[in-house]
Every structure is written in structure tokens, then in C-alpha cells.
Length: 325
Length: 78
Image 1 (cartoon, each protein chain N blue to C red):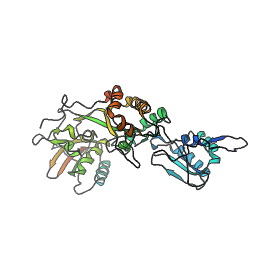
Image 2: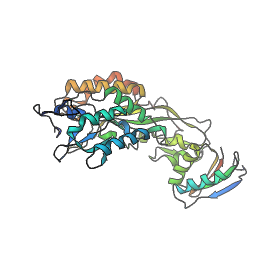
Image 3: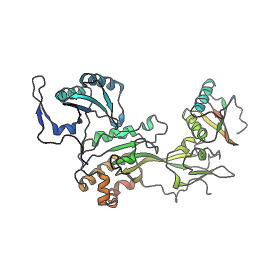
């Protein structure tokens, strides 16, 4: 279950570069995001692109560098949204890294550590988006990227329940949600909310047309809020469903939902404490999903309680939405 | 509310998403701010999506009437 990258301690080579003799430590290569290719001496250089977003200006500069160093003149868009420059000769690592650094582009990493977060477009321009996934993935990249963990640790941010960023397959994933609240005053009983709800969580009263809400079916996507012509449905609070312990690969695991409405400002705490728990309980080469199976989810939830209590599920008993059936 | 006078009318029954929204948008683009467009939309996907998009473009939905298998909306250009 370990990565198939270079881990041999004896593989140090000297690289001659413009008269200098900088050392390339193959142990560092994995940390540095240099991935051995089938072809002799050639590596893929993985760039660090949190949330898969990049300014066009930087993209132009990267294109020039990729064109210069890729022996085949190709890049690959990785499954985790990072650009990989293929066919780079290891003897040129130092100069490519310097050139990339000059334009403010960092190289990513592989191995047992917190990886570059992935994210969808989020609420900035995607009409479905409920959370600012790009801002969040930027934050995670700045705060946590490269933090050592027992095995790889992948995070992602989806802005809505469509979950394009596949939070259910992450070691720790965050998916945007909104809690809807209904106000009878402005409601005209037009029934659009009931039509707009894809989960059958809103029925319409046969006479008044007003919503009859079933919270058990609600996915907190906010379609009712967006569709309502009179703003009778409003957002009460936005947050993230936190999911832990997922992964894909040979033996996929579905992440477990551990928090329903985690506010933005608690996300760093949630990651920090989860990594702390993982480092304290995980064995080398063991993904957090397997640690949770071995140690038990309760142990984790007890540890996380101070953070997750900030995002408790809505108490529909106290605040029922919509008219009674 | 149903007696609001519409300056224009568009029957989008049988028109699929997102063409129905694009047609509504083109029509609204040709109208003056404050004028009202009457729109007929099928139940299902069209009524799930088009009103959301119309709101997001800054127009106001003044009235919604459910009829047999479709909806009749009055949209005020924003």
C-alpha cells in the first residue's frame, strides 16, 4: 500500500549545473513532486495548483517553461487538478525549479503528507455553489500542504451536494450545504419550491399550495431558496458537511459523515485536529479510513467534539419548516 | 396578481433546458426595464431550473400559476 516512488536512502546523485554541483537527493524528490517515468532519466514534474485554478498570466509563463524542459513537449492535467510537466530530465531539476519559482509557481508533493487540495468552482461563479471552495482550498494549501502524516492525506471541497470534488472519496472532504428556513408571510403558495426540490422533500398543501417540508429527505442544496420567487425560503446558515476516511484506488472506502454544518472558520481546526489524531493513531502506510476501522470512529469523534459541535445538524423539532401536513 | 398586464408572451412548452431559458433571456433582453413577460413552462426540469436562472439574472417573478402540466409565470424585467 506504499507509493511506488523512490524511497531508497542510497540514491543520491550529483548534478552539474552551470559550474555548480548541487546535490539531488532522490529522497527529496517525492517530497518535491518529481515522479519517475518509465523512460530512463525522465521524470514528471508535478506543479502545485490548489483547487485547479490558475491565472492566465501564470499559465502562459508555465507553458514557456514546460515547452523548454519537456523533452516531448507535453503536459498532463492530473486527476487532482495539478499540471504535470512530463519528460523532464532529472539533470535539469534545479534549473526548472528555479524558473518556476521565479514566476511564483511551486512544485507539488507526493508521499505520506497532506496533499494539494482539490475543489470545484464554488460559489464565486457556479450558480449551484454554496461555499467558497476556492478560498478554502487556498487556505488549506497555505496552512497544511506538506504536513507529515502516516500515509497520503487528501482533502477536497465541493460547493454543493452534487459533490463534483468527490468528498466521499477523500481522507477529509468538505461539501457545501445550506439550511433553508421558510417564512409564511411572503409565501404565495405558488408551489415552485415543491417542483424545484429534486429530493421530494417539499410537498405542496393541496389547498393553499404552501410547502410541507420533510427534513429527513433534505440534502441542503438550496434549490428551494433559489427557486422561490418571493424569498419565503431563505438561507439560515451555510456550512460544510465534513466527511472522513474515504479513499479511491484498489480498495475504495466511502468517507463517513462526521459533521453536518461546519462553518468556514472551523475548517482549519477540523483539519488540524484530524491530522493530529491521525498522527497519534495511524501506523506508517495506513490511510485514515483504515485507522478509523481499527481504532473506532468513536475515539475520533470524541477527540473532534470541540470542533464538530460548532456544526451540529439543525434541530427541526424546535424549528419546523413549512406547514404541517 | 394574475391580472397583471404582460407586454409580451412566450410559450415555452416542449422546449428543453437550457434552450427555454435562453429564449426567455433573449426576449427579456429586447424588452424595457419594468415591462412584464408572460412565460409558460413545462412541469419537471423547466420549472425546476428556469425560475432560478431568471432570478439570478436580476428579474422579478411577480406571479406563478399552476395549470394542467405546466406553469404560467409573470416576469418583470429587472
